View 1: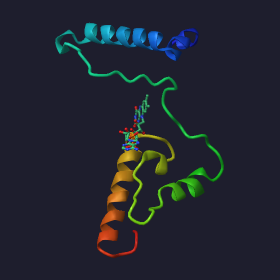
View 2: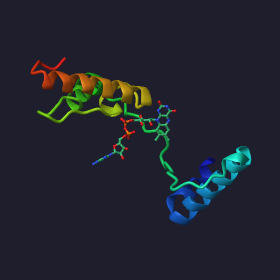
View 3: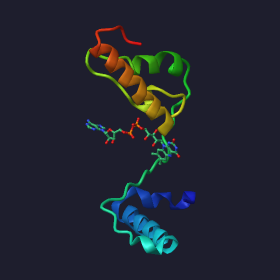
View 4: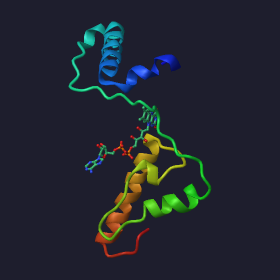
Length: 109
Ligand SMILES: Cc1cc2nc3c(=O)[nH]c(=O)nc-3n(C[C@H](O)[C@H](O)[C@H](O)COP(=O)(O)OP(=O)(O)OC[C@H]3O[C@@H](n4cnc5c(N)ncnc54)[C@H](O)[C@@H]3O)c2cc1C
């Protein structure tokens, strides 16, 4: 989206119009799909990424994913050097191991 058009995302009328345009374009590309979505999500700020500050990866994230008794954290922001689906899956796999260890009465892996 061109920078001068981004203001349209800041109010509901503009956001709805952009969503309608995207759906119309999508329908042109895939006419057989008969698009009728229940909802449309618009991300005003695009892809979220960390601010690269000292200690984030080595100090802050290990704290953010540390279990609290029976509460376990499986979110990409607690895991990766960047926010991705892959890091979200790795976080889920890590949290499952933590839960299994807890249920088996073993120390966290
Ligand atoms: C515009 C955009 C483009 C992206 N493009 C890519 C890409 O190309 N490739 C890629 O790898 N990654 C991409 N990402 C990043 C990727 O989507 C995320 O990193 C990933 O979805 C994070 O997974 P997650 O399970 O950690 O968190 P989420 O997917 O955010 O899941 C968290 C879930 O918890 C729910 N939730 C929150 N609070 C509560 C509560 N109190 N109670 C119950 N449920 C709650 C939320 O509704 C949500 O469903 C993109 C992200 C955005 C926004």
